[in-house]
Image 1 (spheres, rainbow, N blue to C red):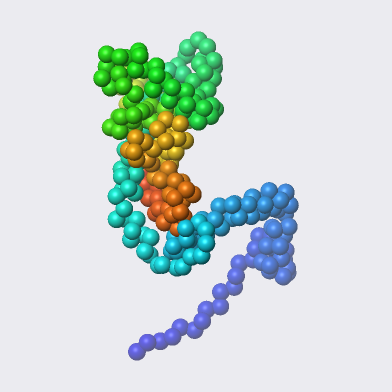
Image 2: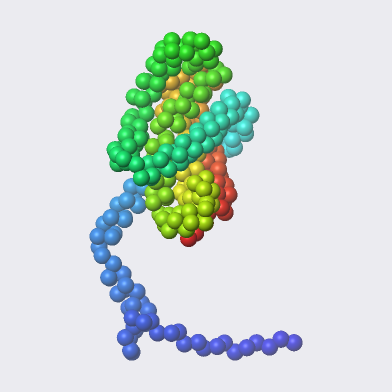
Length: 317
């Protein structure tokens, strides 16, 4: 046997802004909205509309076209998940994934190692500290295409003459299908170290000097201080640098165009280059749109996994 309790009549608590005997929460909410500066809406609403028009709407249109056979011109029909099934059976796409992830992983590791070492140097008490910081930041503001053609000349002409005794560099490394990726990684690291260094310097400057002074009194060496104090306390900056680096290098494109243009053959063809070529030059608009949709999901998953793993080792102080 069950009994039904009479409905309780709970009187809502009066709003803090509601005057005694006032009409209730509606009036309070109107007052809160009325206090919001209009400049807030003038700044936020246009940005939101532009974001939706230039980012969200094209993304949704792209997802729609991934279920069609649209070639970029003419008529088209809806074909369901046919593009997605074909994508996972395409050897060229799988090779591009392998090349892209290889370059991204190697470049991410090297960029973070070099930038952390450089940040430690630039954060030390050295002469001309500001000048050095400015010099090492220059690669980040240069056009990667312009620098890429300079590197292309160096790899194709200068290195074969300078290192004529080394088999790897005796011939043009850019024409070697097994080692051309090394040139792309070199350019990527050279250009990417600057930005990561700035983030690491920002992290190093948040560490209290009292911790180093106390550890020095206890006899801790410089290496011990780095692993026990410095590296744990810049954990958040290490996480964001790793995630941003991996995300950016999974979209490697500008470095490949001036150096190898995807060659020799398709040995240095990245996912983004494949999408560009097939979608805009090869009449595979819907198919490569499918590739782009899948790749978007892959990048999001990789970033989430990185955050999940790396944030566990962050230390607060």
